[in-house]
Length: 266
Length: 266
Image (cartoon, rainbow over all chains, first blue to last red; front, side):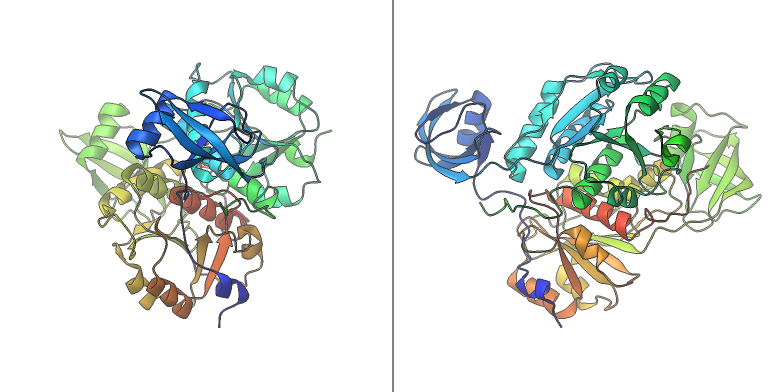
């Protein structure tokens, strides 16, 4: 016998949106004309074969989502005109992802996947034992924008400039809870730890570097932050897997996966 | 003030194991001599610079983990001798991941990440609307083995041969619950859906293809499977993200992340 959920369930799975969606920096309001960038024009005209008169959706992280019409195609740019309001702005919950740089493919992956799962701020950190010393924040941002365009989000996470963990902790806002992914097996399971938290609104997830934290970073963490160590099970997850897994658990227990305003019906 | 968890928490993060761990097919018992393959020998000798007399850990998915000593290095192979028992076999919970093929990088990623998170069987399926028609199961297995070696797992997931979804469902064991990731927004949140399930031991997660299911597949699903549709939040996740996210939630609520036998202390 089928239960109610099964009866109403339509079993479709789509990971592409019915319309093309692009992120722009410009303000969006009825009647305004936006000039799309060279890469956006290439994608729209050469890859997706759109022509004058075709419609696409734009969002800028502030004004919701707007329907626009392709008005003029030039060699390296094109103009679109805002013709209709499509969706009200929905902001992802106030969760930050703080992590030490990992190698290129994996850090791109973290930026894209965390955007899909839902994250407000991505904060790369350098620690005493971090091997890599440079993070390409612009590339992280490009990965986040592409993921936001595809997953139907109406905002793009803020990619903060890379800073030392010690500096980040020195200025850490006392009211923001910091979840720390622990691989020693001494922390409580993430699910239980998150269920038992009080009604904090501001959150962050910290995934440490491969080499662990130094003694002074550890002291600083203990002194200045209201942190929650959590375990992600008995296997040793790579840093990128841990970041994605912790964010998934947070979203499902405390975030907008729990009782969500549906933004899927485009 | 620090709470108990914070006091005992050591804040280290390691995603590499202290020893080299390799997966072999051979039986493992005290005193037996194992010949490692050409790629394993290359990795051990040329990449990791191990020499005769050095130790490494072996596991085969059946006999737990054993300490071995490198006895003889030849050109394309090397012999190791089992010298000590290290850890008892721990088997991951009985959860299968069933999914339609996606493009190469992403399917490799699903195999590796799901192994880290913990999965017993990976079952690729072809559906009426699946574009790709061939899955390289051997490459998936290689990705799973590498992930198992790194994450400290003592088993490697079974990679089943790719079959039609209709065939899989025709033989579906009635007692195995099937979680279906739904992107329509009509299914209950995954966390709530999993919390409210009865004490089933056998589980599977199904992530459908990009094109959705056909009418006949849908009918078959409804008729023969005790399935649980779940929502993964308001954004539209890519199929690979959905697979990883659903497995993360399952492990944290019902799997071995909840009250885990610790296998980390190697």
